Length: 373
Image (tube, rainbow, N blue to C red; front, top):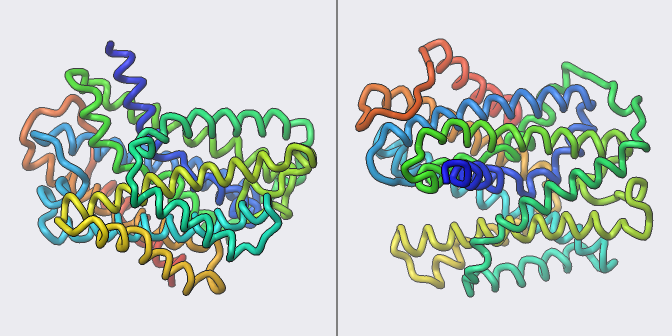
């Protein structure tokens, strides 16, 4: 039972992390140079592992079950709760905008239709499913995550003989921040940590191990995906990474890449759209229709405004740096205060001092300022 609970908890984090964000990684890695991108994937992945572990300690030091906004309010006050809520809104809105844009491109590559029309169709169908609120949406990660991992491994196996080492040798210090926002977006999954504690039940001692496993596997998957796409396509890598795989899969199977992209963005859109609708509906007491409009049509209007001036990866990048910075800084502040105001003895503790805390906070803030400034 202990191992089963550990597997379930780790799978929850992996499922929350590995989503449509993976599709933007090859393009930004190709732009920066593979070695530059590799440093980003491994470095940011390990930093987020640390953030996840700190948040896990916060969760274990607190009695009862809460969501991120609840922990933020308890340890950083109402202002902290406000910023955590804002980060969730920005994160979900940004993701839905990017997925509407990318989903339209993927659908257009299959049907040969106008990308804007395909984006409108893609959005319309998914927004309707979010309105209905199919329970199957909530279970979609259990299907999607193993499928994504399997497809990435398959793409790697097929790509390996065709990899050009010249595509993997470039490093540019001046471009070190180019992949930062997209990669950070792809690793964000802190919302899963409270749920992991609940899943473990009386085996809370396994939370640390579950977080480590659940944080390291996405690093491996992202490296394999970037290596496969950039290694073969180099500077010709497309913005939605699973598109343009004819060189790897062959012309007859190239639609698999488009379906992979479409399927990943569909399930991510549905999960996030439903979560935001229910947040407005259940937690803030808004009517169902109002909650649906706020969850789906506000980002759709933003998509219509931004589609000609922002790309799939640009939206992921901006969303990643803002959301990542807020969540990262708040987590550091929460763990510092939780150590002083602990409500229970945690099953594990992690060392942190002012130097580590300030260094991590500055890292998130400087990264955001550099990319948004």
